[in-house]
Amino acid sequence: MNKKIVNLLKMIVLSLGLIAVVIAFGNKNENNDNQGNTSYGFAMGTSISVAIYDNDVDDDKITKSIIEEIKILDKNILSWREKDSEVSLLNQSCGEANSYEPSEELYHILSQSLALCEDSQGALDITIRPLASLWNIEGDFDEEFVPPTEQDINDTLQQVGYKNIVVLKETYSNVAGETTVENHYVSFEKNNMLIDLGATGKGYALDKARDILEDEKVEGALITVGGSILVYGEKCDGSNWKVGVRDPKKPNDTGAMMGHIEFPAGTITCVSTSGGYEKFKTYEGVDYHHILDSKTGYPADSELLSVTVVCDNGLYSDGLSTACFVLGYERSLPLLEKYEAQAVFMDSNGDIIVTEGLKDNWVEY
Image 1 (cartoon, one colour):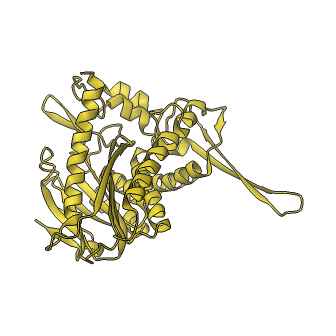
Image 2 (tube, rainbow, N blue to C red):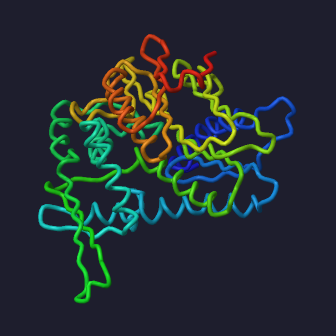
């Protein structure tokens, strides 16, 4: 079988393992009569699941609509792999002398993502792609892994830095002042830079899904896109939502939980997890994970094994989980406070730390 197909199948199996855990917790109730109608898909390099809890809507139509919307978002806008996506076209056309005019939607995503980059002081950096490609930890599972040299890392770091992205907005009106038009432009202050929205895109997909749920007047839903989850509304029996958090000390056991977060019926929020256990490669007995520090060029060393962030905004929950993993517990607290978010941390000793606003929701195993 083609090696690329084998690797894709491995990714799907790993992702479905995570989704199975989340759905099991979402459906859990004593009477076992509240199973959501669940559909699955694949986009953004990961698996998607959509569970609808509402007996009065066309759940098949809604689940298909949400999955298709996420696929279109990935293919047309977010994917750096798709040569005709907006992000790819931006990466191809931008340089010191060129600019790109993004759609209103990409402009919105870039603006929110860059705000997170700035507020996290670069712990989240959407220009990390050249460095990620150099390390290739997300690449071929069967390929022999050798860490890049320090010289290669230092050279590649010259292509990384969100502060070198320039986003401009031009606003003008017609002569009578009746119509206001906005034009947006993106440019890079350095050549060979590449934008990668992988750290915020899955969360943004949840924001898009929430819009569909609202438009369709759905009572309850649980949606996962990789490690990001949307808890929405109320299940048919009014029972609490329970979102399991994987135990990063047992990376090969997708069913191993360190605890769960319990949300009351009616909650609408997003939960995103980042951890070094998700994707890593080993060289001479040392594990190298995929979450890179844009300041050092190496996998982040913050003495954390995982971070799970709860935030009402999906894009922010996704980006914050990455930023907090890079920052470490203490340095994450002001950032979480600014975005009105809560979090569960597990440090390298296996100790679990829960922020104050989430302590009543957390159940540890």
